[in-house]
Length: 354
Image (cartoon, rainbow, N blue to C red; front, side, top):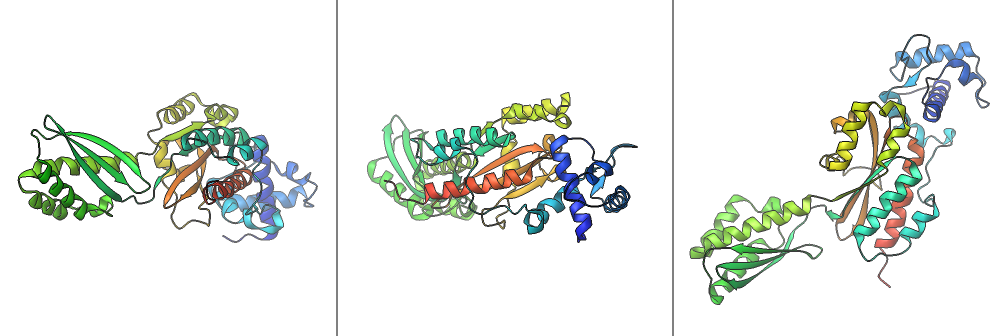
């Protein structure tokens, strides 16, 4: 949708004012802005056009206007990159707040610890709710399987995925397998499965493995089940959250039922992977995406906006960061903060260990 310069500036003024106050914006308020030299009558005419275009709406009679999801979408897609608005986000800016800079300037013993702290600092910097997933492979593959007899009809299956993600499984196969037969089974499984993703382990391949395993087909089936479980567990990403109480700062989200449903989702975390998993693989360089209102795939977040980014840890390992706020969130600040975070993370994970 193309807007002329005057309509664009007035829409931008409405969005920025509503972001700051949460109150409907009237023509008189806009006419008092120093950088706009339009009369209240001109502004009212332009606001009427913007309302007809579906970009703003009057919530009730005699009130000012507020942006619609369509208006925010236009703002996010076009106005943030329009140099005339002064809102172009820098590609390599410094992350706001020294705490985050200090956090990301040093390696921690555990990635999980760093991600939890990162969620806390991002929530403090943006004053919104933050969620961060643990790292996982974009499309993980099986590296190798090592089988060892444990006696008593039990088998230890060590399953290693790319990135040296190790899953240990003790399998009850009913009876012991001799060492020679165990070696053959180990060779059969690795020869057929190494380097494959879970999507590539199909029914014909499973049938072939069981046929080759012969009398140990049941043991092969148990190992295959363990392999599938290893992939499933790896796909279930841990989600770290922080700043849930920031939601209470925004009256439009503070309805008792809305806030209860949203807090439940944040606490249980069952649907947060869905909210973060909508990131498009064809996104921008740093894969920052904005989802507004009904675009968010979680029902209890339909009154929110979610801005997501994908962080990379090298060797195909990636994770997601999401910022949840009201529709009137400060998109510029959130996008710039996420871009700076991605730049800092790239510097950490792409440089060699000292």
